[in-house]
Length: 451
Ligand SMILES: Cc1ncc(COP(=O)(O)O)c(C=O)c1O
Image (cartoon, rainbow, N blue to C red; front, side, top):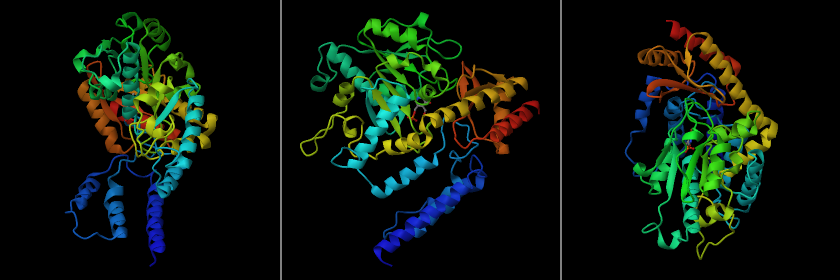
């Protein structure tokens, strides 16, 4: 076989296997069974001295790998806030794999730089955030929060007359950080990596739904970063942005918003939940959660475009580029054009399609919550978004109901702890989830609770 023919045969085989996998996604158990997990033993090989056949390698991956996937790309995965992959975004990703672009700057990939720039503008438009903002397409909300918070600290230090790039942190004025009591662990991780000691973080108390209580907001000043949330991971709730950001503005603090999934409410009929969030300084959100793009696609948005561009600058004598080159807005130097699947999702859904996707899940969540409440289960949150937080009569009962429902295959969902006691979280975020899937989940939950 010629080189071209054998490459074509291999890629065609991969495409065929992917197609078969997707055709069976509705029937696939949300979590692999014991036999599938045991099959993973097939990968326990020594590194071969001579390379093995590529088709046989692909078959190994499919035969033992495909059954051991969680069907998070399917309709009955209610864990975390995972989101499936829209065909349009997955297709764009496949073509990108063939291009294999190093999407660091226009010089390295004119197409990536152009399409990501368009996607950046569309994101600011659909999320209705300041149009002058810089948009960096990073790997995850975690990485994008790291970028945003490093820009925040560098800017606050510059305002205090300190040159962070030259002098680092030793002897620098202290930058305080105020976080919510229910801050997401990845925001803490970003802060930890940046050298903000966990014991020094100032915690803002929250109300019963997990929102910062503006009346108990710790004092802020012009050397404070205030971290807010659009979409608390358990309740899906939003901090009250209007009073909190007004207080931060008055004090000269920097406001960062973790909107990993919740910021998308802004593009839906639920946009009022995010009122005032546009007044913040920086935001992070994911494509791979609620926009249903493939992993890993996320964004840092920073109102002061220079603040992000300077903090993330990676120009070298052999590779200088524009201020808005993605290598100067993200952590990566060599990178995948992760803005392209986001562009494809936005282009194929359009404004109305994005709103419909978000509204579909919010409607499903509130319908599910109503069913569960009517059947005597305790729904702990107000269910304003796509999260339903549930507890049964006792902690043991909560665990039993979850295990029982997981065993039926009606869905997979995870545990959590809410206000000191176990609960479980049901998250609606896959474009494939239909009303029947949610009805089956409700039925199994109620049956298990009655048993
Ligand atoms: C509220 C919130 N913030 C941040 C993250 C982290 O996002 P990522 O997994 O993209 O780093 C998540 C979920 O993973 C989340 O739900």
